[in-house]
Image 1 (cartoon, rainbow, N blue to C red):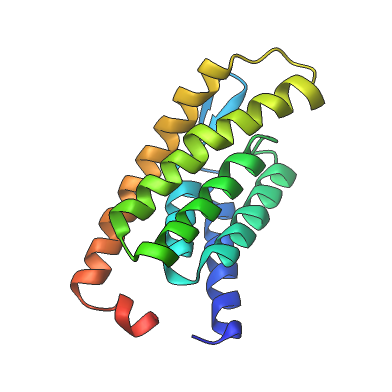
Image 2 (spheres, helix red, strand yellow):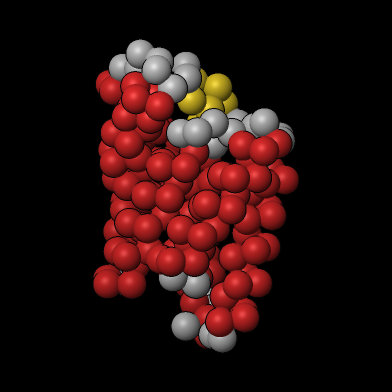
Length: 163
């Protein structure tokens, strides 16, 4: 796949996330959980690679924040999850492990980063153990949905054509 094709896929997925963010999100305490972002992270990680997945997460999070449908927590959660999912897929080519990488990256590492943002930058008291379950639920739902989409694509042997 050419660099231009990867940029087009990344842009299209970012646009879909930005559009869906005005419709589908669940407010949970300080954060807004957004399963569609996690679907996009896993899809982008598999289709175009880890660095494009991070770019997609950054673009989508920026647009969501500018549109008022995201929070600052979207940046560390989505970007860390996308990076870990992409690196896991690049190394293992396992769809299941890639989905788990998204959940661990966002649900644990992203939640820890969001805790520091809430505490240090926003000056808000945040319970780390409140953020982890919210991020885990959102990332698990999105990663599971992406896993099923990718399994369907893989069953038709379309992933081999993309690589």
